[in-house]
Image (cartoon, protein in one colour):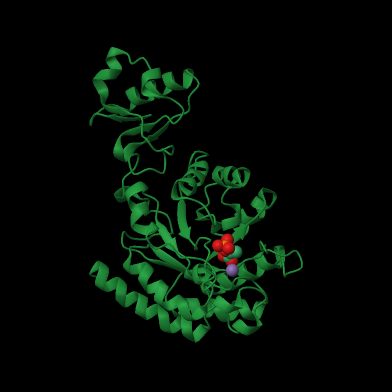
Amino acid sequence: MLIRFKSGTEESRIHEFKNRIQGLGHESFYEADSSCLAVPTLKTKELMLQDKEVQMLESAEDPVEPYHLVSNRFRTRQNLDFGTHLFQKPDDFLIIAGPCSVETEEQMELIASAVKQSGQRFLRGGAYKPRTSPYSFQGLEDLGLKLIREAADRHGLLVVSEIMDPRDLDQFLSFVDVIQIGTRNMMNYRLLKEVGKSKKPVLLKRGMSATLEEWLLSAEYIASEGNSNIILCERGIRSFDASTRNVLDLACIPRLKQMTWLPVIIDPSHGTGYSSLVPSMAMASLAAGARGLLIEVHPDPKKALSDGQQALTIPQYLELVPRLKAIQSVLYNT
Ligand code: PEP
Ligand code: MN
């Protein structure tokens, strides 16, 4: 149930209402900017409204969607929290760049300095890698987190890295700025809940065969634990055609805008699987309204320990960024 209060309703009366609902055994979430209270586990017909409550209500509805907190009905895009260090202004566009896996200190230094040189703020790199084969490189684990943190700190960058196990959360809280949940873990609900209990920004990738609704419900798991600092990342979905590694669903960008206030970014590296296809799809993502990109970059892709085929070289990355900025300036008139 979503309840909208009339403008000017006193906060104390809203709190009284919230307490009554809590007494009935239902958790509720209040969004001050839209004067909206979400009570996901309660239907309007189950709540006998008291006369004094009816007076302060603008509307009460049962949304058809199963998600509440990440819905456009609960919050509007305009009140996206630009106060966080992720988006610094309404038309901000994030480029998160770095290798698939953290490999060496030298590799991370080269990439971090390129990210800085390109005017971007986010360095990515996997330390715990979800590999299809148990015999493939699994990541440097805690050493990897240390190397990416040190490289980022030398250049004043923020760190994005993937978590696979809730037992590593404390380590992630101290080493990374944005916790990535990968495609394979989009439905790891215990992990989502644990990450939701922290306040760390979360980059939630789309499951490789997840519908938009399933994806938003995964985001709802995080939000319902108290953490709404979520960025959605489309990384391609599985299909029958092996010409590209995955099928990059750019239509999800405008469609998600109709469904959620959460920002959407695109990963054209995993989305296509080939570095030669990354620049086109990066530019197309921006044109379709994405709020950012996640791009794999490696100083020597042929020698990469994972996903080398889809990694841009540093010169290719440095050439792409100004083209993206040019598109953004046309789109947003900046
Ligand atoms: C990655 O970002 O390197 C990664 C493993 O991504 P995904 O979860 O999209 O496969
Ligand atoms: Mn990768």
